[in-house]
Length: 196
Image (cartoon, rainbow, N blue to C red; front, side):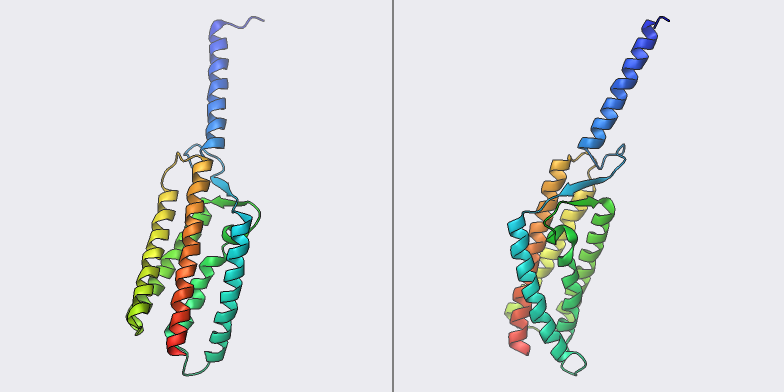
C-alpha cells in the first residue's frame, strides 16, 4: 500500500498539531486549549517555617484575648472580626512545605476571602474608634488587602502565562499575604494595648 503525498502531508499536519496542542497544555496551563488549568507552587521551606511559627504564636495570643472577652460586654467588634481575617493566612499553599497545585477555583476562593477581608476592614474603619496611629495601620491593612486582590485578579486574567510565570506571580501573592499578616499583627497588638 502506497502512501500518497497528500496523506503524508495530512499525517505530518496532524502530528504537528498534536505536538503544539500538548506543548501548549504543558507550558501555558490557563490557555483556552489547556485540559488541566492549574500550576504547581512550591514555597520556600524556611519562609514557611517562619511564617507558620509567627502565625501559630499570633493565633495563640488572639485566642487568649478572644476567650477572655467572649460572652462579656467587653467583647468589641475589632476583636470579633479578627477571627475572620485570620482565615486567609491558613491557605494550604501558604503553609505547606510540599508543592501545592493551584487551580482557577483555588484563585477564585482566595479572591473571595480577600474581598471578604476588604469588607471587614472597611467595616472596622467606620465602626470603631482608633488612635491616630492605629487608624493609619488600618489604612495600610486596607491598602494591602486591595493590593492582594489586584494581584489575584491579574493572575487570573492572562491565558498565556507560562507555569513558571504563574508560580512567580503566586509567590508575589504569598509574600503580600505574609506582609498583610504582619500589618494585622501590629495593628491588633497595638489595639489590644490601647483597649484591653
